[in-house]
Picture 1: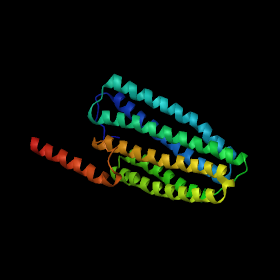
Picture 2 (picture 1 turned 90 degrees about the vertical axis):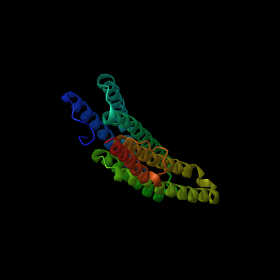
Picture 3 (picture 1 turned 120 degrees about the vertical axis):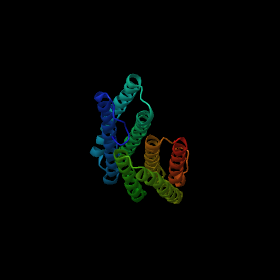
Picture 4 (picture 1 turned 120 degrees about the horizontal axis):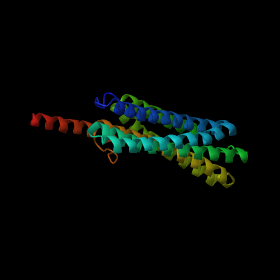
Length: 249
């Protein structure tokens, strides 16, 4: 993040910030794999892969704790300001989003094992495949945006959450109708609905991750800004800040 952080007198400070960044991206990579594998395990009725997804949760939690300790130590020891402070606060919040994505992937794996145990192949797998691909791409692109400090890419990812929501709502309507027509399918389809709900939440967390990135780079809190207005909000802050700088000059 050399483009965002300043050159510090202490090389150790630079190393600490870079290590924090690397740990964040490593954790993100594990979570991305977790989500992809959770969906694939369900589609393939692969219990072994589902168990691997659950096992990865330990690594995610370990990194979550490690990054939290690093953020706390840097804040206490270095008392960072400006862009450095925003970076630490942003990563601290984004890590929580990643940890919750991992929890949802673990939940999908557990539901997969239940479906396998009961020998059920209910409706909704096509929707799971489609939405699973969408949220996996959101995670990948949000991490890529963090690596490159790409605000435009972050905004695009955030807007993708709307598409995920629409797909989820359409799938939910279809499955509820199916259960009404065939009450015998209710127990199995309910599990599929929970899987879809977890995927929808993962999309939300990916959107939030991008919002934290915007705060890191631009210093503006867009958590409560409509996704369609993100670009204008960021541009507006830039214009205001630039005008203020010109006035001071």
